[in-house]
Image 1: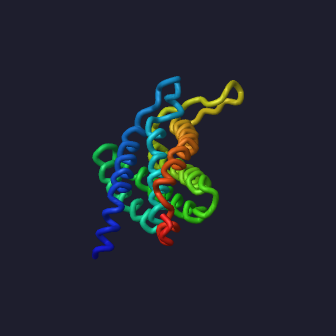
Image 2: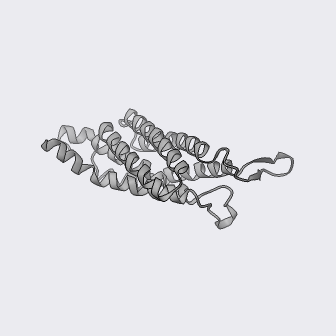
Image 3: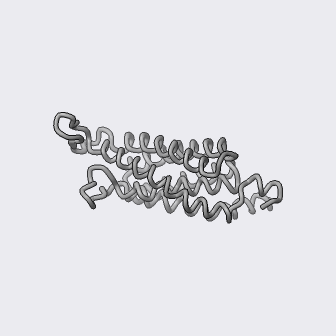
Length: 204
């Protein structure tokens, strides 16, 4: 019982961080990023959602894949409930499905690479998770919703596609960019957050 309480206490911060990130992203993804004329390519949620992978990876590094999955499951449940209140049911369903699949993939990939060079686990797992998340979320959230078409390309090379396809592409590019940028705080925090192996051997 004491071990269970300790585990729950240790996960309060990552769970709270996860819920905050996903709930905010569920709302922000509904608003196009209009600066610089990028409204057909980006939503504001693209800038906040990659932080969810950051939370999962730091938890995985410190506590291992099992507890990282606990954060994912709890974050998933609470985030879906918040999303129902803050966004539409369809957005909540799409977000929950994409979140669960992408985060579990992130946990799996990070754990497989945890003994590689320090930057590989967070970068590769974030990239793979972002790819899966984008495909699942945008297809479930916006396909066949009657959103207008947009023209992408130049001249004869242009292609008319639903505007949400452009949002998905722009969203993915931002996620990948943020994944690279987040390597900086990950590198700084890795000195403060010892890996699971060090904790087990008492070298933390």
